[in-house]
Image 1 (cartoon, rainbow, N blue to C red):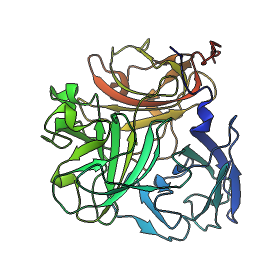
Image 2 (cartoon, one colour; image 1 turned 180 degrees about the vertical axis):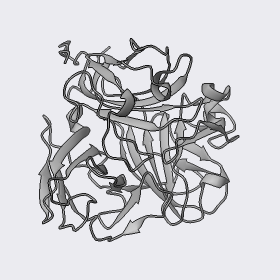
Image 3 (cartoon, one colour; image 1 turned 60 degrees about the vertical axis):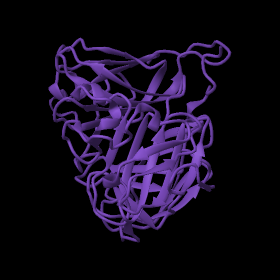
Image 4 (cartoon, one colour; image 1 turned 120 degrees about the horizontal axis):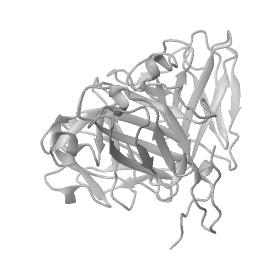
Length: 360
């Protein structure tokens, strides 16, 4: 059995750092592979500015904000993506701190590849979806028009999704999140609970939000209760773990500065964590903004805050096969606390030909 089928994770996920210039620019990725992004997530690192999300299913004229419940925005001055390029993206001229203001503002953009913008109609579920899927990387983007009724949706992954992030585009709504390991925090099956990307709230019981049985989330479709199938246009991002590239799981904190080690099977490039049994923010670390251990420059999808390492809230050592917590902060490592995470690789622990990665 191969250690991984993805020897170069930069073919599917990359982080770009850049400085705004206020006049328009092209950002070229620097990974080992070219990456034409289909899901782009921007954050100003220096200022109190929202998280801005685009995807190529919808195009360059519309975006959503992960820390707000707002419907999607259209052609807003100061938030202008001009192109999805073969190895990066283009930015327009801006007059505020959105994604490309000058005055030496610095930015991060996390990028995932789906299918280079090519979509197809998926009729596997009760509601037809427009899907852009990358089964090799375990990632798909789907859009559909909801009707306020319980339904099933085809996701195109070919395997069961482990994380689903869902938002109404045409109206105000929270960002609903399904995570396969969120349920134990409230002694429920995970299809009976929901957490929210835009809120620091604990995981809550929302019976049958994602199914009436575990089999309702499967290799072809997932179940969606009427309260998440908004009577408007909607979008969902679906993820499944791929050995050596991505991992979605749970850990229990130990309340110690010599914290838990979480095995992923790869050296992470991106880690996002959320406490699930109690209120707590989402936290994101990546190895571009924190190139050396200790990694502690975090941002939050549920807040518009600038980059911080305040109170050592989220500190990690990134190692060749996972990450180790280096804080006792309650929102990321309380004794007995339950946490969910998403992680994407910089390098697999061992390549398909048996070559091990190096530590940082």
